[in-house]
Picture 1 (cartoon, rainbow, N blue to C red):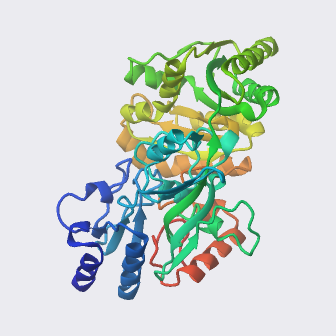
Picture 2 (cartoon, rainbow, N blue to C red):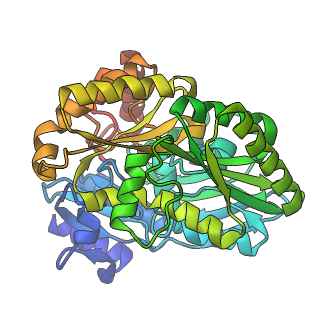
Amino acid sequence: MNDLIDTLRRLVGPAHVLTDGDLTAWEQDWRKRSRGKALAVVRPASTAEVAAVVKACAAAGTSIVPQGGNTGLAVGSIPDDSGTQIVLSLARMSAVRAIDEANLTLTVEAGCVLQTLQETAEKAGFLFPLSLAAEGSCTIGGNLGTNAGGTQVLRYGNTRELCLGLEVVTPQGEVWDGLSGLRKDNTGYDLRDLFIGSEGTLGVITAATLKLYPQPAATLTAWAAVPSLAQAVALLGLAQRQLGAGLTGFEVMGQFALSLVGKHFSQLRVPFLGQADAPYCVLLENSDSESEQHARERFEALLESAFEAGHVIDAVVAENLTQAHQLWHVRESIPLAQAEEGLNIKHDISIPVSRIPAFCAETDALLAREIPGVRLVNFGHLGDGNLHYNVQAPASGDARTFLREQEDRVNTLVYDQVRAFNGSISAEHGIGSLKLDKLPAYKSPVALQLMRAIKQALDPQNLMNPGRVVQAP
């Protein structure tokens, strides 16, 4: 191992091969659930250096854990506890390589922080629409590796739909340059889609060419209290019909989730908090290409129709950008408030939108019956069918004990319900190691066989992020 460390120091410089000191930032997952031990943290500055590092590790038979901002929620970007794995941090590879205004594309390196990417696009007069709570620290390489979702999937799709090309270092240390930025290229298998969502198990994404969009002329935000989840779904359908592609966000939040924000972040104003006839609230966003007046007229017409149909009990429309940011801040504070309440069991699930009300009614009742006093923190991206259906310990119980004793049971109860409703146990967070043992019970055996065959073909040594997504044959 010392020979490998010496080689890595020659390749990237001694200052960028970390073996001593506090490596918590690279060895501990974002939720602080797991801590591993790395042989070394290696921080290359170029694709050529990444390729050289991968070749050296392949020759030594040493496995690699690619890592971006380490903000993942499925424990997929930290080393195991063996002290034999290399953490390959892409943080130094953060350059914006090119903006092609005519082609509406932006090419960046994998370590570029998402917020920096958004700001770069905005300065050039464009929109890069991927948006999620960790955007100030997550990187585009990690977003692509997990096929991240966020709040605007309804209009623009997951990260996969925003990517036109990749540059990837293979497990053998070769470089595939697929950064052309073409929207049409039917010359065989789509290798780009193979690597997106693979969580670093098939290769290392080092750069990407991404789609840009024109900046909207106006963006309006509303917060609506709804009498039920069924009415929230009905409101979604009405908004899609009346706003069309202008509907860029549609979030749902249960009252208990909002009560945690009110409890732990009392400085935030939570609209309609505790309103008994409104068990859920919805956050809507409308982007318009014409003018703010046009956007406001359409938004107000939508809400008027929604009131008449009984989909909405009450609503507020942000009068300016500051108010809109405040509303979004409330929504994005739910996970932080839940963390303040104590350790919890998180679920990132997707269900056909039409079946979400029935799923929640049945699963809420099931959990209440099986674990009396359990508290449900239900919120998420209703517009694309993705719920963060999280389970908090009873108020009188110890959160850590509840997590230790009940997590597997709760996961099985929830995932069995997800399967019964033709859903998925991972909508946008990935599988990582956290759901690795659960996946075989809820994924088609044929699909798993194909996934293992792809892993074996591309990474026969099983050196790329082993023990994540799918078990090697």
